[in-house]
Image (cartoon, rainbow, N blue to C red):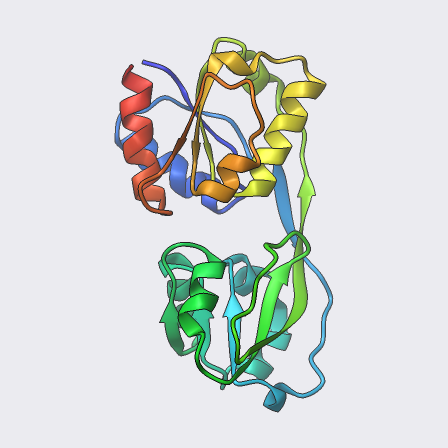
Length: 226
């Protein structure tokens, strides 16, 4: 069986790794970045009709300033982000399933002023008519090097899961920096944008049937056994 490499930041890394090990997979890898808060402030929350949130990291790292926004309904990119918002006491008005652009398109046709809470590295959006978005950065990701044990394991090949375009870019950088062979590794991307960020030279690139950890792990289970 091929090893499965996971590279997402914590706490996602441990969650994915625990689930994969319960499936009998040999989990390797480590976070290639850490997430840290950014100081921020909103002058007038009443200027907005809701919050647009593309990551559960917002609720983990945005800090006390979030309390000033708790009357605003949340439009969350996916169910994990929505669950984290509810746990923080926010009302979730809508939940996407195919990325933040899909969610914004879903909201089109209404007049909405949304406050987007995001990281420094974020997806550009093509806003439909009626939707206005102001972006506030509340966290950033800081790169981490590939650990020596993961580097050694990758030289033998395997399957790697990539949950974001930034993770894909970091993996490419570490492969190039350490002269690792891409052709020995199969990649699983959470969506088309992440797959496009992977570049070329990999043994194969696969896109999960839906942008969820469960769908990525189902694909990983099949690839690791081949």
